[in-house]
Image (tube, rainbow, N blue to C red):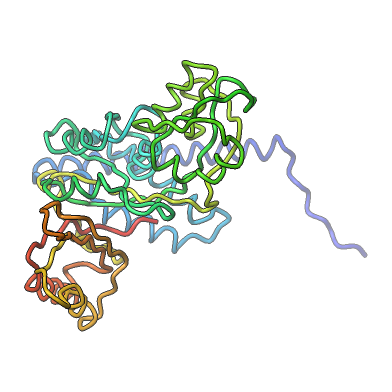
Length: 366
């Protein structure tokens, strides 16, 4: 007697099953969209914000915890971010400013955070991103603040100092730089265009493979790609999306010196556009402080963090430009001010500072 082997479904049967599930999913998504419309009506009546990053973070983390496969956690996050983006757009599409033109990593970070259903507002530089979000031309801005190999993006940090904008979210993006050109060959390249950060992140590769090519700074990597499309002797360092946008060949893939090159982006807006998000359970607080110019002052501001059990994840200094060798310190802390120990640490820290500004409280990015 032999065990019966269950009949395997044919390709046609599997496709029919997938089509049926797709229609079920579509019906469920439209049902979800209808709920979102009702939520939007309530929010408009209350005058409450459409976008709640802590709520969306909680939903995604909850679904990832409940997921039993075969979808991976990252897949779940990507799918639901787009679902929520599409439903949010029914209430009110978000206008998002970022360093342009099309094809930049800043644009990619904006889409990764908000989903594709946004109104794009590419800007020529970081100053314009801040201005757009401050003036109301955009609801939100997305700016890079830190790279794991090259450190902080100094212009972004300097702009935070006197800006009314605050941070409401963050995105960590795995950045892969590619060499782009009109021709698929690297022969005869005279100049390579890219943002200074990208040139620095690829300096080892450029020195080894294009030692004679001049390195020229561009306002953004996508702008470098646009320039490379105008001259056969020029190349650019940019994303595959930029290659597609400007009709360029990818001459060399992933030329960044660090294979795990990541850039962290901050999502910014006016407090009246979106107040500080409530606790999501996985949050961060960003600050700018300065201390009196006396021995041990920097050590003193770290003491409250230890006393109250608050972890510090970033500590960067920037010259205050006062001519007195004074510095501002940019600090990231784990936790949310609604937690008693975090609130106590912040209160004690503020009492020790000559200057103190909370840049934002926001859910930690994936």
